[in-house]
Image (cartoon, rainbow, N blue to C red):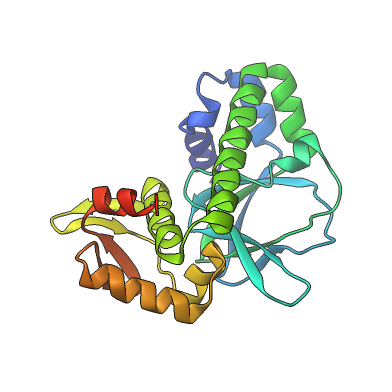
Length: 229
């Protein structure tokens, strides 16, 4: 496992150029953990003390409104870091994080990761860049939730997911993440019924195909044009 752990971190884009000695000290404090589907990684009120790296699987973060409605914030997949805000603003979590699929994670205490960042400041810059990009994507999503139609929000969601989960095949681009209509609704701030009707429309127009809870993007250009409506 230690050899696999070293290989994983050495090949992470985030750790590009990391020196051997600081990495070895960090790896000695990193624990591998397996999480079954639907197991909570953290809940609101849990202390934010650890940073997580995904070796395989998918993890979802979400918030629950006062009315009990779930809003999905982000999906994380292979090679992603999450829980990184523990480094910069420790405190208690305000969100839920759960294994959306069976997942294999590497877990590091914030102090161990901070020690590595002090030894390798370029990694700190890379983490800051990741945080900035995620914030920009989240702010763009919020803007679409407020001002765009359900069809435009759904089109935007599919194109966002292509970036992280897209797999090309002869039919187009498969979004390799199984999502129910309810889950899609929680991602775009709509009802499940609205999502079902919007998907039916996109299928009729030949923009997407659905297959076993996966969406296949047939016409990315048309979806991109729809985002402006």
